[in-house]
Image 1 (cartoon, rainbow, N blue to C red):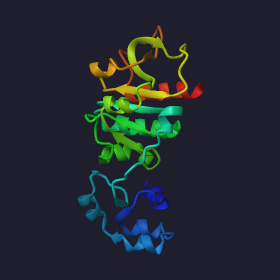
Image 2: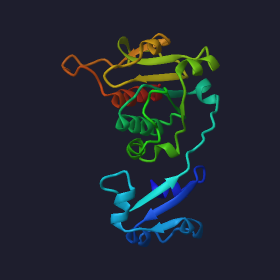
Image 3: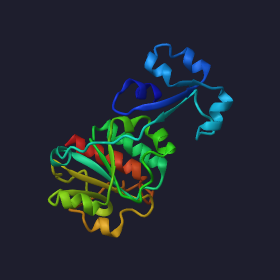
Image 4: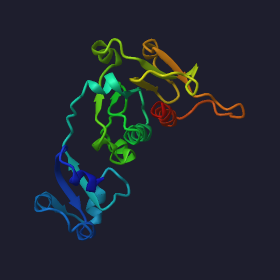
Amino acid sequence: MTAELLAQERIPVAALYGTERWLETNRWLSPQVLEIFNLVTEADLKKISALSTPNQVLAVVEMPLADFDPAWLRSDYCLYLDGIQDPGNLGAMLRIADWFGIPAVFCSPDTVDVFSPKVIQAGMGAFLRVPSFELPLDQLLEQYPELPILGAVLGGENVFESSLPGHGLLVIGREGRGLAVETEQRLTRRLTIPRHPNGGAESLNAAVAAGILAAVIRSR
């Protein structure tokens, strides 16, 4: 992720803290990067890192300010995450968006912070390519009142047999609870990933469901 950070220009890197071993294996660093590099021991790195077993380098990065392109919702699909609480799940869904070329991810105000360390780690650099925005669903729909809103729910139409619109917002709900009542009321399509007759699981993990639905949407 640090190599990706240093290779891009959209998000400024304020400082680097790395071990001598990391510096030795990254001799390609430009003079500009070396100016912000601080040599630390592995013990120092463990003190300043949020990880219990940190790697060889830590980057301090400015918070990115993403520009929104209205064409993303008018001609493509974006994700809306409703109250996702698990950082690992959120990071996985950012990776899913990155993998399937979903141009943006929207998060409800009660979703875990996209830029928390655990989300960044789980996302494996997806935040560099997929812009994210935090705002209530109603506020988004005020700007796009005719937008198709597809939600993952139990008891909806079989997504594998459904005819889907060419663009829209795919809404994934909180682990365990699913979509909030007010969110579900705004859906224009209720989609379900059908369980196999021999399956016994009560439900799918939120990130797994997002991946399956994204794959179906892209296959159409």
